[in-house]
Amino acid sequence: ELYSAPITGGPSVKLNNPLVSGGSVKSTGIQISPDSTRVVYRADQDTDEVDELYSVPITGPASAGVKLNWALVAGGNVQSFSISSDSLRVVYRADQATDGIQELYSTLITGGTIPVRLNPTLVSGGSVGEFEISPDNSRVVYMADQDTDETYELYSVPISGGTAVKLNPALPAGGDVEFGFAISPDSSRVVYVADQDTLYTDEIYSVPISGGTSTKLNDPLSFRIDIVDRFKISPDSTRVVFGSGQGGDSIEELFSSPIAGGTSVQLDTASINYISSMD
Image (cartoon, rainbow, N blue to C red; front, top):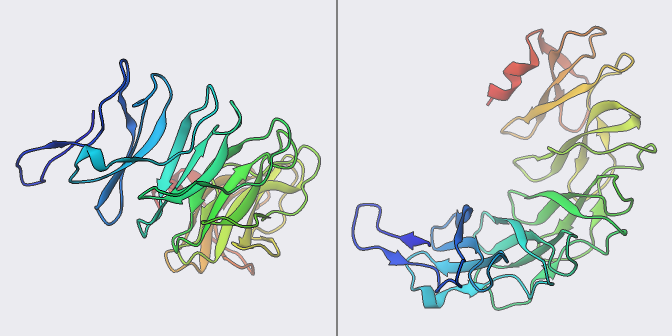
């Protein structure tokens, strides 16, 4: 179950309502809102083995808790969620309407409203994968095989609902956007890796978060030399540092490019393993 206590010590309060027989709060499904006023958690609280999403004031009482998701289809579960940095909304992924088909929803953290589905109707067999809320809380960027089954592409939609736009251009048959995109700290652009121009050759791209022209950040690559899928956006949102074999051999090197495109510069010939420790 879920409890809250003053950080300096004192009596604790139980935050969840009574659990159904066999139910439990999921230890990997608990988040505190950035303003520290509420806790959002996943639990099979009402139906055993059906994970749903709840929100409760951090100081309780449990009776003030609300369920955030709408009624789930038989077999449906809430899989993951994220709280906006302004602590107003929760975006969650669930097979809420069709068992086994993950879709994306947005709702107020205090509940009381019907959740808004953020993605449009998916192609048969399609599902939403990873997602991220922009730092300014205006949009949600997500991966989905929304238009073509088994072809994952990148989309952006207003956080409170509206028209979703595809961020990548048409891909070659068999191409995919790789999981692991990033939104710039100023919420203006999305950086992603894809075999967008040449099948099986992953390159790095940047695109405005609300849609527009996708710009390749790396220089031309040697045949079958891929961009490594680890990269970092600078804190001021002006540049992207990434690993590449674009020097023409198998040595992975570090490069820096303006985030909106331009001349890239080589930083080092060190192994790409070092990129994971960059700030």
